Image (spheres, rainbow, N blue to C red):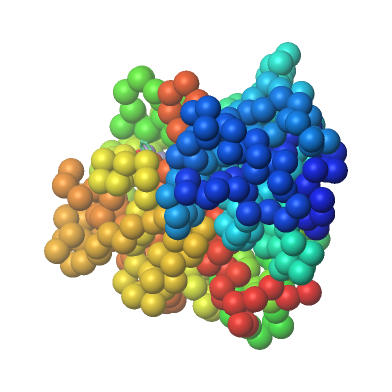
Length: 492
Ligand code: BES
Ligand code: MN
Ligand code: ZN
């Protein structure tokens, strides 16, 4: 599958399996040069009441008169001006019309602005074309038979459009990797498998990678990670990825991804319903891998470190028990009152490990709490940070990338609930504000640098008939990281 930019020439002579034209509701014609036959067809469709131009409204014409294209698909953009969400809705509607059709070569065109079309069409196509194949045969009748999509832009805009496409494609590749990894069942994605996947990614892009095993993790005194891992026969892993795009002296940005490859809850066992979805408890880790995939393709002038603590959380004879006190890498002791609050345990050791990089910023990404799903649903990821500038940068990245997050509070009043009579801190507080108290727990281990936490429990995957990973928050992370390069621009 390939996305490319082509200069807009005579529309009537274009050979295409489907020419898709995006139109404002009020537009008389398509606004493209040399397009009288197209405008005539539009006028006719409007007159016949077959096409209104309402947002997401579509009309397909077969063998359109006076065009070389086999099909013409009109797609409504609604009332002007169209925002990013409208563009995305229109792009989704366009690809939905191609479902199952023998449209291999597709062309997209609109009057203006082409940047908006590119930014919407690339991820929309990513969703449309995504198929999970790791552990099942593809459908006999694939939904997407598109092999090449070309966005038609005026010649003078080709260069700018190609730069925009390059970034959008890198994000799409990152999201795809994230989804492919995140969708893997627990028995196909153990901590060991996750380590191999990271090594493979590093090999493909010439990144540095280190995969620490149990003995290394013991040497690092990561007592909290080890406590979670001790109930499983699968050994834990601690993955360190590095991308060096700037001089060594530049402080790196660090991404930390929760890599619980299956979360049963441990001795504090979860209820059975939908427990299968806890294979997605490594979506934070998958998003770190996805961000590296995109960054490695775009090669911005930054240094980046990825940290992934990986383990299963299972009950068993050797499992950690409620009431057990363990010593984290930081030296702080933790009373594990609930073994199902394991994400914060593995993350706290990774956050402490991050100090060694003297980082410019540290962002952890985790499917951390069911409470975050209750608070924000499946719309925004939860954002927690004591640093206003960092929080604003992530909010802005989320807006730009159409992968939003919403800032949530931290604070002593919430952190008080984590007091323990038997350790320096407990791993849970009461039920209220569960996503906030979880973030407060992490904050204790993230004092040495600028830090933010993204709770992606509600945004990383979808349940129901279309169950599967979304690829979020890869777009947010990539936009944030690109903005950290000098001038916020791409290098090389
Ligand atoms: N991985 C879960 C959080 C989760 C649950 C994400 C459901 C998405 C959907 C996490 O490890 C967990 O179990 N958290 C507990 C914390 C509680 C014991 C304080 C939770 O949210 O119930
Ligand atoms: Mn849990
Ligand atoms: Zn979990």
